Image 1 (cartoon, rainbow, N blue to C red):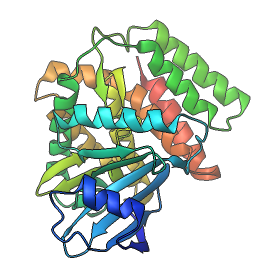
Image 2: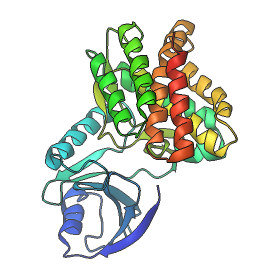
Image 3: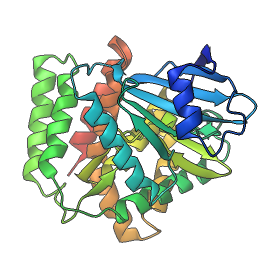
Length: 315
């Protein structure tokens, strides 16, 4: 993630002293060390890395009372506590940036581990060991999904899809076509299932870091319970397609990677693989529309058309 140095905190700074004396009390040897602050420039809230000079480690802090995205009016303290609980649950199952502390007095700060390493987006770009990294991703997501089985809320899946459409300025005819296709999906048995689970939901390549060969998941603020596990698979598949379309000469070049990722997630079970691929176009369509919100004019039009084509391909 892009970051820049914005400050250096010295003893006497309240936030620095809280980190040193309480949060990292047993790890910081020099209680008088300075703490360098590096701001992340691409988050929905103010997010900073705090590096303890001479200690060779950092922590991350997200400030829920400092939103930078579209959503401004919400309960920051509640959101802070919710993500802390979600991270605690996820950390009991998979590798995540473990939650360390929360403090409403510091603009509702959530402090987590800092995971060094390369993000999944780096492997998208280089394609170095990308098959191997996608295998690790598939196994991690499968473990999260299988171990958080719950009831299933199909209605929420469609409500969210319409919400994404609402954030796009679509002409009347295009929106009506999406509405019709979504109606057909609703009345079919496509998304019917007995069980839901916890999903990460924001499966963006910047939210996964590989450290010592293992994937670590970041940012569980938008994670869901009672969800369809294929959503995570579809969003990542859409991210692959979108990246390759923009940077590698065509989205079709991502298909071998997508197929590998899904096959590994299915555990090599052909029936499971076929069930996943039957539902996948719905969530790939959603993932492409999520990306479309970040683009304008020509490329946004391409993503919208591809999203519609995914829905039309469902039978």
